[in-house]
Image (cartoon, rainbow, N blue to C red):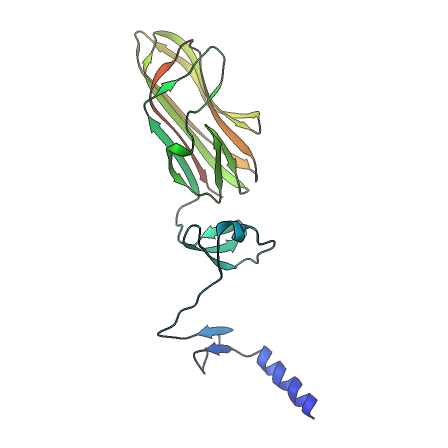
Amino acid sequence: MKTLFAFLLISYTCFSQVGIGTNTPNSNSLLEISSTDKVFVPPRMTNAQMLAIPTPLIGSIVYNTTFNAIYIYNSLGWKNASDTDNSSLICKKNGGSLTTSINTYYNFPLNHHHVQTQNPLTYEILSSGKIRVKENGIYMIGAQLSVNNMPSGKKGYSLALFKNGVLLGLLNKNESEQTITDYWGTSGMMTFNLSVNDEIEIKYLINHNANLSLVFAAFSFVKIN
């Protein structure tokens, strides 16, 4: 009889609501916590510790002490609960010089010193113009540059993306034709499906044999899905 009673008690407990700080948890709640002077504290850990969790369940919650924010795990990975925009990376700079030569691609002269916006869970800047993506998804990638001393005459140019060392696509390809040395600029944008650990290089080509005076350079990544 004692065994039967214990079994019935365990069965009742497993299928009833649990209340902490209340004796009357809502019938629609599996767990209800009630307090006016105490708080709920999720596990606290560094970003490295969070990423080292082998198989987190969807819906898992931690407090990331590296970024001082609540993170929630979903089908796309760990996400900052306070983020309202799609994960993005923006780098830009004003001034400097732009190396050019005939039929030669150069990486954009932008690195971690030029970051305006970055989600480190999604992007890692490896070197100038070179980024590793850390999440599978669809990314919109854009680039822009301008100079103030493009020489007269025709100059072929292009903005290109390379993935893992192989040309992925051209953001822009055209010819500049100037009657005098003057300001010039170009930009482009495309959308690509990228995978974890893909290394993307943003490059430019300007068919000219001397350095140009850079006015502005920028590139951006936005994870849209």
